[in-house]
Amino acid sequence: MKNTFLFVLFAALIFVFSACEPNTSTNRKSNTINFEKEKAQVAELLDQLSTSTESGNLDIVEKIWCPKEETMLIGTENNEKLVGWKQIKKAISNQSTSFKETLISITEQNIWIDEDGRTAWFFEELNYNFILHDKAMSFEGIRFTGVFVKSTEDEWKLVQGHMSVPTEMDVE
Image (cartoon, rainbow, N blue to C red; front, side, top):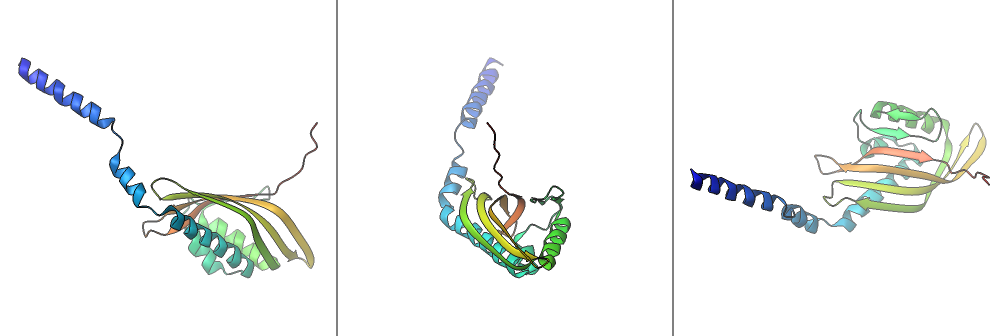
């Protein structure tokens, strides 16, 4: 009985100490991920998102966004809290038909990839120019942040976006 107890105690100690070891499979996996390639893929999708938004090509926009109901976009207007691809698509479609001669330029872009290579987040600054009701509109320095995840098909999909317009406050 005493030998059985010592054996179980010894086995438990080995288990406990081995559980504290770093996960070498994760470390090996992150060594095989080409982070620069993944960042370049996300950057390309962000470029495609800008150019397809400019041209009103909703087919490309739709390929970039995740088509699920958990997807969300917070826009620049007070009522733009869009949850689900259907709401986002409707808002983008309405904007596409209302805005003319849209020109979007990315002035700054930062992209990060998590260690398992399945999640990316980004920050961009955009200049957004368009004509609305025959009036030229320009927004400089729009902030666009968001999150991409890799789908089961190993494609990056945009699952969350947030746009904001900077303002200056005279606080003393």
